[in-house]
Picture 1 (cartoon, chains in turn blue, purple):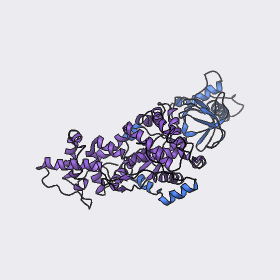
Picture 2 (cartoon, each protein chain N blue to C red):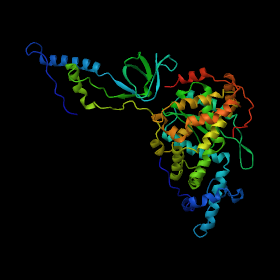
Picture 3 (cartoon, chains in turn red, orange):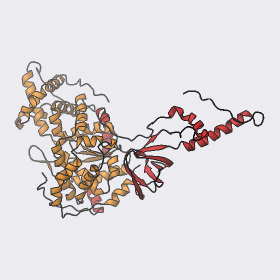
Picture 4 (tube, rainbow over the protein chains, first blue to last red):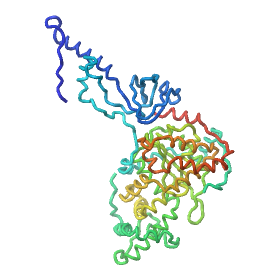
Amino acid sequence: MKPVRIPRFGRPGCWPGGLWRAVGLAMMWVLGSAALAQTHRVVVPTELRAAPALNAQPLVRLLKDALVTQTGQKVGWIRVTAPGLPDGWVRSTHLQALAPQPSAPGANPLTALGGMFTATTNRPTATNGTRGLTPEQLAQAQPNPAEVSRLESYAVAPGQAQQFARSGKLVSRRIDDEGTR
Amino acid sequence: MQARKNNRWPHVAPLVLAVALSACKTMPELGNAGAGLGSLSTAINASGVAPALPNAPVAQSAALSDVVQGASAALKDYSAQEQRELGQQFAAVLLGARPLLRNDAVQRYVNQVGSWVAQHADPVLDANGRPMEFAWRFGVMDTDAVNAYATPGGFVFVTLGLLRQLDSEAELAAVLAHEIAHGVRAHYVAALRKGGFAEALGGLVQARAGANAMTTAMVNAVRTIYQKGLDQSDEYEADRLGLLYAARAGYAPTGLQRVLQRYASRSVQDANYIIFFSTHPAPADRLARLEPLMARKFAALGGVTNDARLKAVQRQLK
């Protein structure tokens, strides 16, 4: 990373130079961070929900490739907003975080200055990729017999399945296979 | 995991290789080989150790014929145990691509739904017409991709991405029933036969010997099958049978329609649907083929959807 030259602030002889420098850096960090809100791209069409829960009220459907701005975060969920949209929550796995984009140069000198500190990351970067399953992953899959053993621990006996069905009011029906072959 | 070289059966390896080299030529003729040509048990004795094949290099043509014909017959008439062993290998490769979701409650729930539906599937008959019992196992793979998979011998998988999208237990039952139908109708065994039985033979021989390692050929065969998918006719058949099995289990038959309608609304460009769309017929075509059944046979059939029970499970998903 290129060394960043820190601009100096303040008048000599008033405050110690180091203190002025610290105050200046703090201001740049705060203002710069505010201007560099995290942007996400929707990678899986999904609902914007009123709360971070799958059963929370859906507010609007987000289409693929929509861009939203992060305003908060909880485990597994990101609070977002976008022009014309209410504040809401989206599952984090359905979003792809893009690197912060600075505002246009000159719009705010401090913001532009703050941008200096992110210059090396100013390009789209997937930091929250989905846990996909691609043809390439399948083509390179190495056998994992330990996972098959783990699967055995979830086995359900026929009687347990029948009890489960009763609790869900499921009743077997006799239906022939005519027309289904 | 590296496939291990099999040094225990020096006689078998060259035979398997030779079978592989001659498979393309001989397979069509052997597709109708009679059952009396021998079975895999002629190549594997009861102790699970491959017998010596004396004079293999000398009597190559005769030995090759036996093994090839035996493999062909075995692939047509796998026992439940043999299909199970194949299924474990298929499952190991699949779970090598993405592991199981680490949520015991969700895994048990899916096993309960799947086991109940499987109790309403058609019996699988062996070569002698006797019913074979599959020990059905169901798993949720920890991936955002949307898909479901089956293996020979009774393993069925759905992805976390798919589970999240469902609106009812009836929809989950429909997906599982479709995969159960693939297992019942031995569609993956058929895919192995079409893709090269020599690889299957090598893989099964090694599994029978108690080795955990799979042959490279077997691993490649399984990878290829899951990348290419099954024949479209197998998918349509699994739709029809899955509809039947879920309905017999008491679920609303509209579950499958709803799932397919959701698929139809997705873009083929969607990263989480790439494998699904490349390995299945278009959802609209599947819906069209189901339409006559839905309009007549299943039209007046109600059933349970159990929306709330599925939603309660979905809330447990991370």
